[in-house]
Length: 309
Image (cartoon, rainbow, N blue to C red):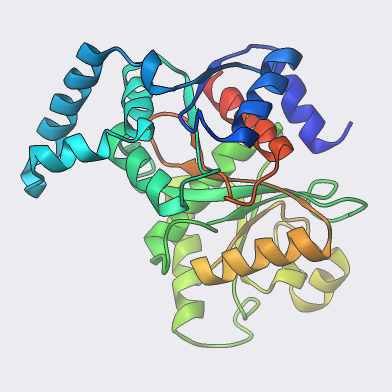
């Protein structure tokens, strides 16, 4: 059974209700039929006619009170709630839905902004970030070809502390969704001091902070990607590495590096890329690439449902 099928089967074990605010998107409509038909989750295509107007007014007022310190005008709040995305997020915040998936017709910044504003930040993680679950066919690296790549969608230039928080969030997702023991590599152009530079120092400090946050996590860095995932290379470049070239979570030093890498692996290695999965929020939420397939939506809903279990 491949990674994607395992995820779907796990979601079926305890189906949750996931809201899909892009009700008029054909791919989303088709995905909802498959999800319901296979028992992966319960879905709600949140069209305007399904929204109670008195509830919507209450959400608008709540949102305004939450953000008025930032000098937002009530008229501006009413305008953003014309998009069902914001009502869906507020309903998820309230517990009417277990999770939220959108992005087929919204950009990542639009989905992330709504999720952060409405769902709020998990104070254990302290930041919103994202990851992709990458399933690479016929691959002996990672977890039999399965990896988590982070952050590939939210934070352009993460600080050392942010890299540590991204690592912690990704490790928790790996354990929850994939049932794997996290082995984290914080990536760089240097392996264990083979080069110097501001970027290298940032990654080295990130590992130190991660160890303070969670001393028992299996993590290492700074590392070049071949030393992180190829045991034969690790023996040459970094024989003392605790992860031994078997990393299944790759933490990228910048959004640029992460985004380029996941797209390269997806296209050149014919990998499945599930995400961006938003992390560090108070409720489960997944973004979608606007180029996503129906199958991608089904799988992202499954991931979101597992996180809500």
